[in-house]
Image (cartoon, rainbow, N blue to C red; front, side):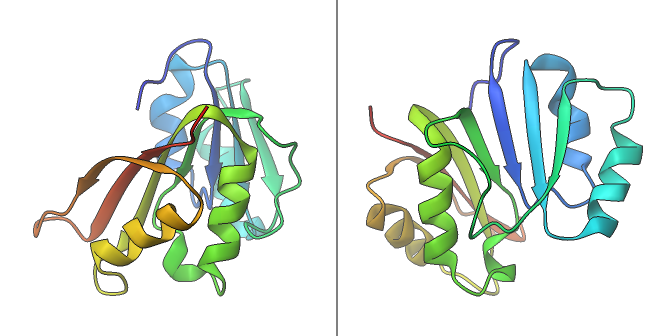
Length: 147
């Protein structure tokens, strides 16, 4: 996924903000969403040096965001914590701009890689790459929303 100084990024299920801290310095703005106020508090502390990060308390299944808003969407280790992964993926696809890149991961102990690829197929997302290494705890799916 190409992240640059003009990219708008959405991180759904941002957790403690570790990922955001790593990319905030090289992108236009990031919206980080988590349902847990404790996680957002940790993210706020971790990312206080960045003025391009907006934290939102919200539900991944009902994102309070406009359609077609983000260049890149990340959902890292999120789906296994969600009661309705199909609803979540529908929302991720809805807020991604046409042509947007998306990175979606799922714990290996919860999902087979084929389950994840089947899920993205349901929403007409184009598989770019699937990373399925025994050394990783997660399967990684890189996909793109069609234009």
